[in-house]
Length: 305
Image (cartoon, rainbow, N blue to C red; front, side, top):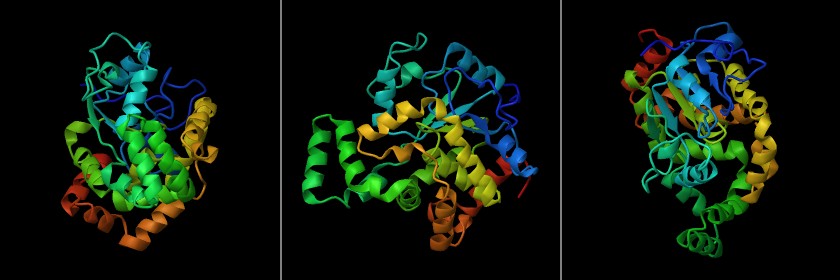
């Protein structure tokens, strides 16, 4: 497969015309960090981030495969989000295999790319949120879920717990309750055959932002540069912000959940350092050995550690 090419978007300088027809918030993380800091903390053309690529047009698909040479797409969304994405794009994607119960997104997949699905806010995280509900709220949530009302069930959690925690609070909760998922992400990042790779969730903002933050901390990127990368998502997601606000509010969350809080990076990095004593010890607590951390550093920086 040819090496990934660069253009104005991949160089970290946002072009006047987006690089894709239907994929928002896309950027080369290494190129943007180099543009921000003037230093090569990680190679360009290796690690990308974006919002959901479900509605990629034929031209978008061609660019992912032949321009960016994407080998792996790491999807951090839930099964509920996958089902909603399939429903939303059912009539607008190129001819593809039919969906299956185990993979509702199969028709949206690009055959030349390997897909890895990691429900980042998985069972441990969800259980931690549910434990904060009253018995009545728990019974309502379980009843809604049992009868297939997934979004309504999520709404119970949103209204009772998530809205009060806020985006930064939920990210800090993820650090503690998504450690198995962090390990799964690093198993992919430590595999040289995974690259070039895209990490995404729905908006490419919070779950994606947290995982990119962890990688950038591991590579020694300054906090202010990590913050600039995170905050860029606010501008990049502007074209669908109104739609996203309606979607967020429909499950009981405030409109501010569509934004990028200016203190998010400081709160998350502060909590990680205070509770775990730094990124290396945090990753070790997730089961990511020092050897594996070194492997990820080498693959992304291009330097032996």
